Image (cartoon, rainbow, N blue to C red; front, top):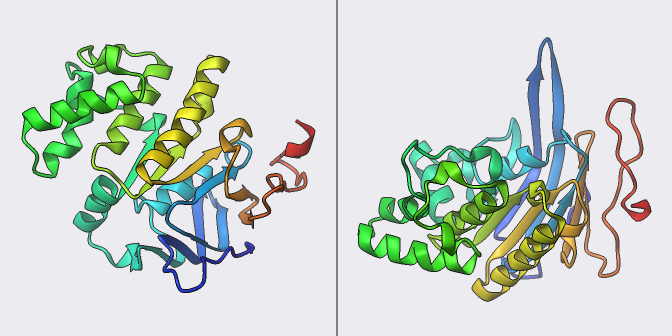
Length: 260
């Protein structure tokens, strides 16, 4: 069971998990990803989620934005239970209220240009193509991907893709930005630059930021720290605290962040 982190008194949390459980099938057995996890996130927070590979970080983010639904418990965004939303309402939530950056979701069309890939969510919200492209170019410039705006999306490097996906996630001005494993960028210097860019853009736009990573560097400066592993979620708001770690339990091995 998780350690609950409450919102400030009198404030409705932007995102809340209430005794959320999630299991994934694995052949004839089930893997417990989350067991009765509870936490609350307030607007403006920066949340860092640490965990080893295959411990459920991506699933946690997909639950947070309504792509996946819990097996038990309730997930609420701005007070609304995502499980009670229609499929269209959850799609609209992901398009307008929540932005997700996940490199595994990179699936551009064969001849799609970068600017159009970024502009598409805005067009779907009713903007003209001209206005959507104008805003897409501005965001690509802000995320450091302006030079590839007219390139074919399929031709980009991994680092360029991550910046383009950040621009796409921001195009509809979401209230919550979820970033899944930014440490996939090969270049260490480019990674550090991108981590700083994430924090800066979140502050500039007043966006609540939630980053999940197996590395600690992307989580520096987080106001709320979490660790996920073995179906458990642990939380801390200690200003000088480190990310909490779980002990070694057989097949799932995690290393204490303090020893890295």
